[in-house]
Image (tube, rainbow, N blue to C red):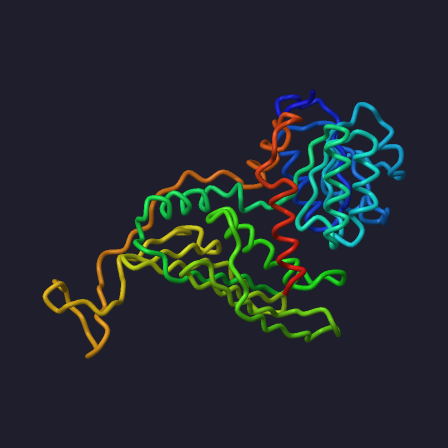
Length: 329
């Protein structure tokens, strides 16, 4: 069985667009030498090879799945096309890593899982935030109740593009935030309301505002792929402290604010407060030092080192819950 340490193993990468380029660059940086690429549009394959000359173009997909020396396949292809090609790979006894949300239909997801189980092959979905060291740190913070009782969580994920034409902004971006919630809390919230707008193309929403509740925690997820600036923020409001994860802030991506608002008895308040109703506590803030490795590096290492009979963190059950939720909104 090939593992992450087998740098000479042959690897197939299907899809040479934006995310395929990111995966290719990551595999090369991880010192893999035999990477075969394929795209239904040969121009995309040639463009990717022009950036990384060591890549090997394979024009025919069937040649890759018939090659007994290629065991691990990475799919960075549109969800609407994934079922057919991923199914073919699994039938031919390949391990597959497929970018989220994988496919567009729950029935297709179930079929892929059945084939993978029958052939004892690895089936993992690319929810990269589950392998993000900052999210791992935040999970520890929540588990240790450092913020107190969690009251509210807000996700903002906005940018100008990339704009999809086969899935809407919720499938593309909200799926990331749902994966973070599922990873942190082991279950998904219930929808309160969902407001979405189709601006560029009819029936494909570009803007999504999702409001949810899990136990006593309220959630907002605000997504857009037609925003002038790039925003990647996660805000957590606790009864004792607040936390901000800002991916764009490279100096202080995680910041803990020793602030809170409540209606305590006046004798409980030792520090300065203002307003005649709510008391606002203003303490010192800090940004913890966190050892950060590339989340995609972590994810690829995890996939390649998975034992065949083990269950991936982002395997069928994980992906099924997210896809089912997306289909319901």
